Image (tube, helix red, strand yellow):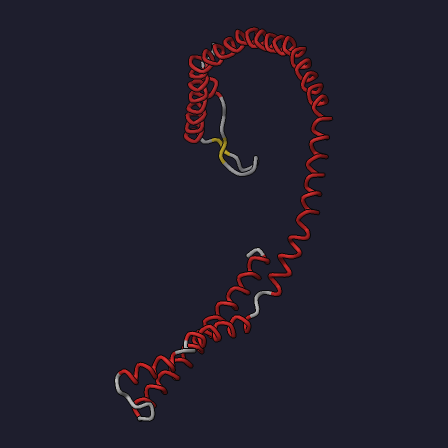
Length: 221
């Protein structure tokens, strides 16, 4: 039998471009034969490695998969059977749930109607109150009336102050026609004016703030 090396050596390699220019070169032929033999050797080594290592592993994996097929098939059948066994119960449960919902439907409808009626009644009862509330909020309080009343109250507080001051001056021996008494009278009049003005301003400011607060509540801010 001819060996692989002998087969390779029997091949003839030529150098040159075209067939007319190709010439036989023994050294070149020897180098090409060595390269071809090396490539063939690597191919043989890879084949041996696959045959001795990967092939047994692939065969073992295939065998394992083949063994698992019956188990997986059996498991799938058991799962299908279990679902089939549960199906009647699930259908019965769904049917019972539907019947229960249907039985509750009239009561739910009556309750919804009663709630709507109650809401409409409440709206009707609250409408006059709401209208009155908005009317009062828009009208507010009489600002100038509050200021005038506060000024009158302050003036009333000074109503008897001149008579009291005259009696006190007489007790202290102060002549009502003297400059001192005139100065006391002027001071009293000035205090009276300041008090009345302050009372009116404070009352006016409070009334304006109250009106603004009413409008704020009416707008829901």
